[in-house]
Image 1 (cartoon, rainbow, N blue to C red):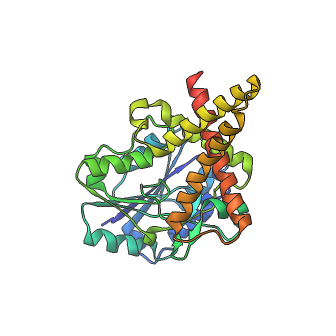
Image 2 (image 1 turned 120 degrees about the vertical axis):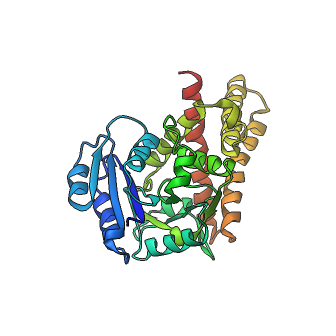
Image 3 (image 1 turned 90 degrees about the horizontal axis):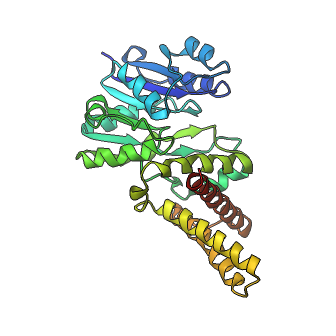
Length: 307
C-alpha cells in the first residue's frame, strides 16, 4: 500500500533537486510505502537526468503553469495522500512520519509548513524570513513547498488553479476552507528552502513575477491586503513624482506617506515573530526589503495596467 505520493514540480533545478530527492530517499519511513514523482516543466539543464536517477517517476510536462504541473503529478499518483514539495527544498529524516501522524488525527484536513533558512543564508534571506523566539514564521496560507493533503479532498476541490502564474497555493487554501475542510499550518512540516533570492535584483524580479497573479481577477484583489498596499504604494509613488515635477511644496508630505507604507509590512512581519529586531541594522535591512518588495509589486501592477 502506498501511503504518500510526493509530487515535485521542476524547472531548471539541477543545482538543488539532487539534495531534495536525497532527503526524500533518506526518510525514516518504509520506502515501499511512498513514491516520488518529479514533473519537469521543460528544463534545459540536467534536472531531468538527475530526477530520473533518484525519483520513482519523471514526467516531462513542458506546457502549463505550476498549478498544471502539480496537478499532472497528482493525476498520476497512487498514494492515499499527496505531498507537494518544491525541487529546491529538503526535508529532515522524520518528516513523513510526522505528516502521517497529523493525517491520522485529522482526516479531512490539509496541512502545510513553513520555510527554514539554509545554513549559508544571505542577509536578504535572514531579514526576509525573520525568525523569532519560537522559530520560523509560519505562513497563514499554504505554500507550494510544503503541502500535505488526503488525495480524496484534493480531488474534491479540483486541485490547483492551472491559470495562475503564482499564488496558486494560497488560492488552494481558500478553496479547501470554502469546501468545508480544515487547513492546518504547523512547524512540524517545515522544510529547508535553498532557492531563496540571495541578491537584491533576484528578490525584486521575484516580486514582479508574483504581481502577475493580480491580473486574473481584479475584484478578488480588493480582499488581499498585500495587493492593497502595493496599489497604495504605486499610487503614492506616482503622485509624489508628479508633485516633484510640479515643484510643489507638498512633495515632502507625499514622500513621508510613501515611506510609511513599507513600515506597515515591517511592523507586521516582526509582530508575527513575537520578537522585535535584534538591532537597528537588522530593522533597517528588513524595512529596505519591504520597500523593494512593494516596488517590485508596484512595477508589476504598472506592467499589467499598461500591457
